[in-house]
Image 1 (cartoon, helix red, strand yellow):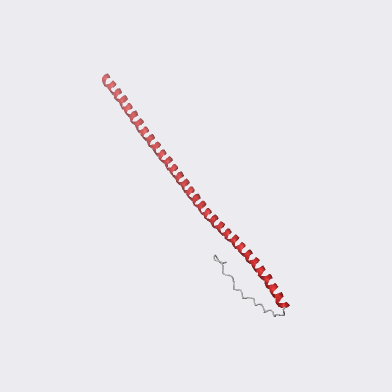
Image 2 (spheres, helix red, strand yellow; image 1 turned 45 degrees about the horizontal axis):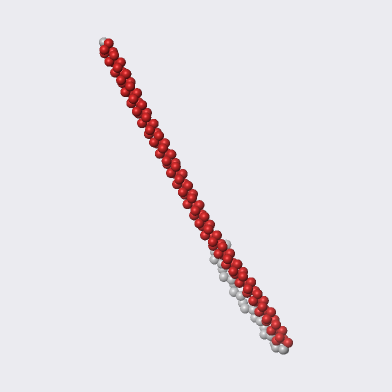
Length: 135
């Protein structure tokens, strides 16, 4: 009976060791799976953050590009307005010179007794409508 009792104890110890080893293997496997899952979640968060940053950079780049286009167009419009202001100023100077010349000629004509013809102002048409939304 003694031999069989030691065999039983040895078998129980062997089973306990086998059970403990199996339990440790299963726990290690679960732990590795948990770590792999956490790594995958971290990688997904990192990927999403990188995608968000790429999107923000793309949006900001597009905004800056359109801002530059608008600034260029605004600068061109300002240049055209300055050019037109200069042309208007030149035309006013020319009109003033013509007016002084006409007045001098009228004075000469009156001094010679010549009747000055009536000046008829031409009918002005309405200015063209500006493109854009109407209110």
